[in-house]
Length: 277
Image 1 (cartoon, rainbow, N blue to C red):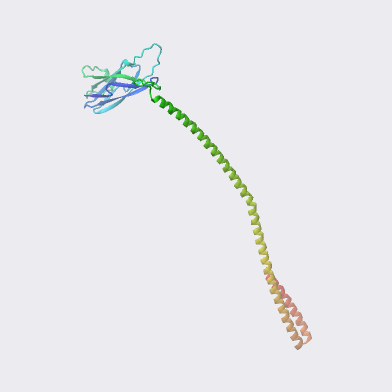
Image 2 (cartoon, rainbow, N blue to C red; image 1 turned 180 degrees about the vertical axis):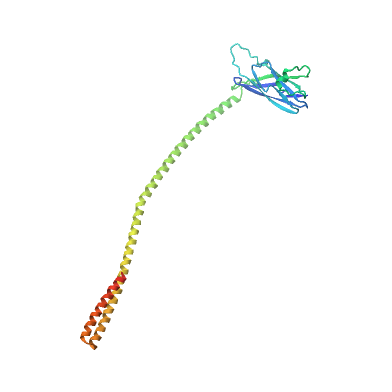
């Protein structure tokens, strides 16, 4: 029956101690029996332990948090933290026990072999952020000038970075203004070109209409020429027939034939003109 404590000698608490300082305690049961443990302290008002008791099965571990509560310091009050101690008790649990751990530690344990282990509290105060003037040999600390030089270099780097940021900002503003000017200029050029393009489009449509009208008149002229040619040919043909009839037929018959011929020519001319239209 062995209970191992990690750490097994000192509980180290790290500052600053104006807030809660937490350290961890690990319990490990390396035996084959079930154990019951309980943690006590000499300053119960200053510490909070979770959990402060429990059962630990064989070959198992448990993690315990020990929290140091902050305490307001007053003038003339002595610091008694170096007197703070912890004690961990453990004992084997009988197989017949089935109650909770609180009732287990309330019963008479004189018949049981109770073991304990003590831990001392150690407090590691927060180191002040100051430069040590002398080293262990009494010489001046060579890190101090280096630290001052590094700080000066950092300040100069910050100033250079700020100047670069201002330069980049002004360059970006100038570039944006140039971009806006170029965009407005391109817009004005495009707007001035639009009326010219519209005028060109109107001229093209007018030329197209004039060409169509010219082609139509040309076709009508050609049709009229053909019609006149047909009409002249018919008149000549009619005159030839009239001459023949005048020579070989009587004058009365020639006159009636002439009237009939003129009427037929007029009707044919009118029909030709209507069909061409």
